[in-house]
Image 1 (cartoon, rainbow, N blue to C red):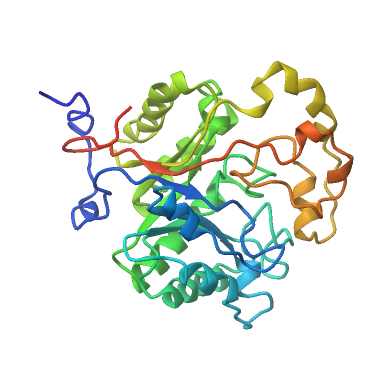
Image 2: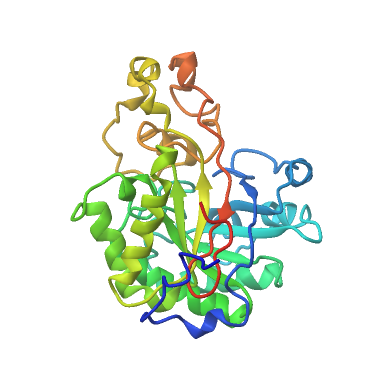
Length: 338
């Protein structure tokens, strides 16, 4: 039986760097730890429970503010706590965020990450982090959903590509076997029309950043019946520039919270966004500015978030859990197709 996806890459430029094994084989099912591991408190233990559920892939976030809180001061407690939980056949995917109180244009220790003032300092941050992990991280992702600007990336598409290029060079220098993952292509892209700001943002990433990533990550929220269309859109973003790389699913859950009518009214209070402050922001206050736009990946709002207790009960801690999985796209057979 012929696989309908076998011809996806016909006539396209397939990156030869994928041949040694950067393209994932088969299906990985796993969990996203959420966006604040070790940031609001002591790192917890969760990988064993994830493994008991069948998860063999763990995705977690690491922030520049966590590992280099001040220039030249390196702290590895949170990252080591994560690494120590991994067992033999578990794979680790790190979303590395350029959030810093001292090194980036927007001063924050959480969200949104922003461009580094000095790309050399950013390169050293990535290089040291990758080197510290000593080959134990299989996938390195440059920030998350960068087209979701002001909430998950406080910069332009051009600035993101500049950081992606630096990350790719640093990762390959320290761990050539690791794959570099493009920041997740999310619901803001898939739910918008061609020519929208989100689509144009990712079109630039697919064009200017084509040499600086190995895997194209998508986030599948919304109507589950639209998943094939979303995956086709992701492929089209690359095909438009004459190439195709593997598509992986970094987050996957059912309909968004705001798609349920009974939730809309109760969620209105948490959808109002105060004006951004020009002052340096700590994690909880910074994230609360835009908490109504996109849910964190399976994580409740930190209890320290200002106004959290004033929100309707139906709004709190109710985001659907998200889990990463693979869908292989490119030459050869397709694993985990929908």
